Every structure is written in C-alpha cells, then in structure tokens.
Length: 284
Image 1 (cartoon, rainbow, N blue to C red):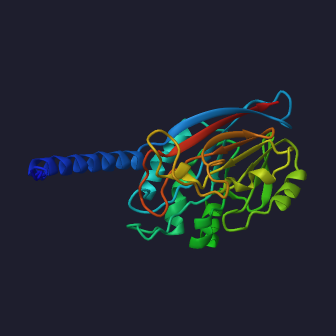
Image 2: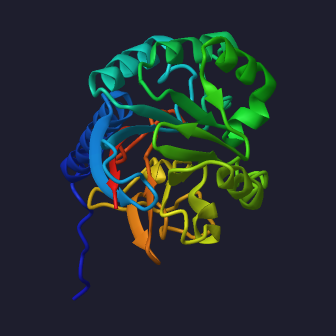
Image 3: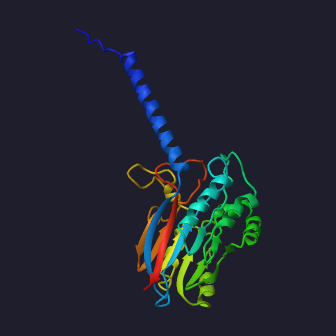
C-alpha cells in the first residue's frame, strides 16, 4: 500500500513565519538599544611602575571610536556623553582615535568643527589628549587637528607629553601603518614619570618594552556585532580576539581595549554596547 505524505498545514508555516518575524523585531529592538544606549562605565586599577612614590592616584577616562555621523552619533548625542564623562570626574581624558565616520550608510557626514566642538566641553585637570585613527586619516586629519587646537585638546602623533606624574605617549594609527613605536618611546624617554602609551589599534602592544607597563586602545569595537553569550565573530586586529576587548594582562604588561562609542560600516551595535573605561593608576 502506497504511503501518502501529508504536506505541512498552512497554519504551521504561518506560525513559523510569525516566530521569525517576532525574533527579527526583538533583535532589531535590542540592536537599537545597544547602539543608542548610554555608555557602560567599566573600571579597573593598575599599579604603575615609575609613578612617583606618594603621588596621588590618577584616574584616566578612556574613550575611543566616537565616529560622529548620522544617524547614530550626531554632535548632540556626543555632547550628552561628554556631560556623562565629566560627571565621572576623571583627572585625564584620552581619546583613542576615530573621531569621525564617513561610512556609506551614514545619513549625514559632519564637518570638522561640528565633530570636535562637543569635545571642547570635556573637563579634566590634567587635560584631554587624542591620537588619530584610520578614519581620521581617511576623512580629514588636518581639519580635525586644526579644530582640536582651537578647543585646547592635545593631538599626539608618535609623540609624548607630561601629564602630572605620568608620561603619556601617543601612537599614530597602526591599522594604516603609521604607528612608530621607536619614535614615541624616544619622546617618552625625555620625560619622567609613570609611562603610559595609547593608540588607536591594540596591535602595537606586543612591540612595547617592559618599561611601558600600560597601553590603552580602541579600534576593535569589541566586535560591534557580538554573540549573546559574549565574544564576537570577528575583531579588527591581526591577532584576532587575543586583544579584541577589555583588559589583557600579558608578559608583565597591561592592555585595556575599549568598545568605543559609535559605529563603523553599518550604524548598528548588537551585544557590544558603547563603553567608557575608568582606569585608576597608583604608584607601584
């Protein structure tokens, strides 16, 4: 006797389609929340070699990957984030590159003055320092540099400055091959204090000598699109997820990689919310 196979009932297909639609709506709502939410504040502490004994602790606020562009990071939203950072009362603010995004999916590209103006309200007694990111170079670094000077914000390009008890070295962008670790270290050698390097990409970290025990970076966005259980399919690093996100302690040195604030390529974050890191430094 020939077996007759029954086709799935139309109601089954309708139920499955509704379930897929509901899941899509939930993911879209989650992505909107993760993209537009206030930054998470993550904290860590580092005992820094070379910091003068008895020096008061120094708190650094690490920002990165602001990516000012519509629709997700207009200057008005950046102004709100600046107020949130000021409320944390950091001693020093470091911005690890990519002030701008010129992504094709942007609904609006802003000019250098509009991008930088909100950052002029950052309030930190030891100052505000910036290093370039790959998008800053691709967009208009001279224009951004001009506006940073107007706002009294320091731009470090393979150079170093004194910031209270700290020697701050700022690397140019490693992703576009502009980072010069030797030149930056030479500039740091002319100053005294606890040595900290920051750069846009974390990929310079293995090149640092033991005399620099702390590096701060961004660029990876912690994947920007992550897994619900943590981690991400890909990170913009030649080392994969080794330096993909968060704090890494390796070979007696510490690296902190922030998830950043804005977006690149597509204006969406999912399971990788914006972050501001607060790093408290004390004498070792």
